[in-house]
Amino acid sequence: MKLEEQEDQYLEVDLAISIEGKRPENAWVTVYGIEDKPHEFQADSKGMVFLILDFGKEYRVKVEAEGCLSKSLIFDTTDLKAKHDEYPCDVDLITFNEKETATPFDDVPIAVIRWHRMKRKFIHDLEYTKEMQKKYREMVSAQ
Image (cartoon, rainbow, N blue to C red; front, top):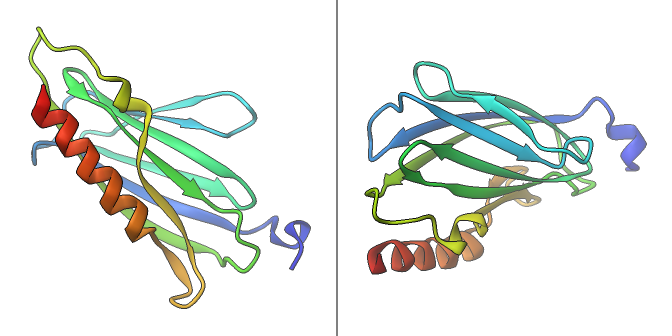
């Protein structure tokens, strides 16, 4: 299948943001990979952001809220076998106090979501996600 045949294919992402298990008052998502410039989306009152990602690209999605360490995810829609899909995604942010600053780790994606050919759906790349979340926890606990 050629990319031209996938033009009507896209990934619907239902991104639910929380801060230590609670609804955020002011959260937003920045998507990199759309027309070579970042696009920012404000979360609704329930902490939800709905995204439509075209196939054939890799997107970096940065989830942020005031007073929290941000988290980044990669959505890889480049697999030629991928089919239209919906992907519910929960991201829980961690607060930090005013004396702490954001770490360089903020921009390192903690998860990669890509097409799994055997399961025929988009899922987290478990190996990558497990390793990066371990590093993220270590970084946060060191602060």
